Length: 228
Ligand code: APR
Image (cartoon, rainbow, N blue to C red; front, side):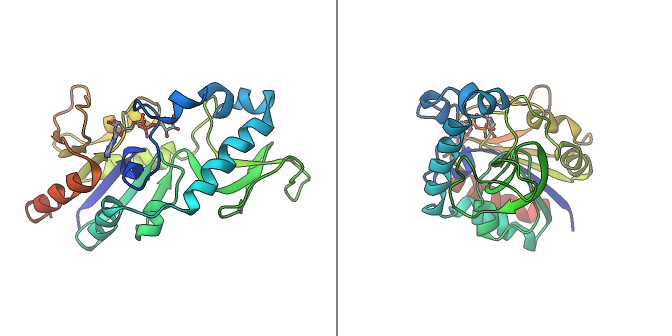
């Protein structure tokens, strides 16, 4: 089976009712990113950061995968699929994707504030000041914040460097190192991009399906017979 790498961002979850970050109604229009999604923000005001993620986690409990998540999961019948997502939601897994790399962490998990392990599954429950890990450290969301290293970037780069097809969906490619993954593809590997807005992938040749995730993935599905 050919290897399909899927690099996804917030746009794939938009039709599930989850905000993106940089659209006009995006999260970073409502919250100062440096206060709620950076390691400095955590040191300055951990309660504000916990409230921000508690609200997003409670909201996620009410959200379901959309058809784009489901089509991406179904592509495992035709390809060896690995989803590399920047999203912290669990909708790819809920749709049935079996290999998902979360570059920026997972909102349904928690860790001690001074050590990335052990990791705790907390589902959709809140984290409060005073909640401690087994070492007595304050619990924080298992999220990679601005200013922190992205531990999964090397495995993700290896997946992209070995893929036969790259599908990029719902990401502005505004944030590194995630955005730099497109540069790891081998020459001649076809790149498809699903996004309603025109996105540039630099010098790389690619095909953009300029549409929202659900109908864009239905269009991608029609290409599968010539891709497998
Ligand atoms: N279907 C598909 N794509 C969509 C849709 C939709 N319905 N609506 C918007 N988009 C596209 C936008 O055009 C944009 O290109 O999704 C992309 C969303 O871009 P961002 O809001 O920047 O989200 P993302 O690329 O995932 O951000 C990357 O930035 O703040 C950090 O950690 C955060 O993981 C996030 C990272």
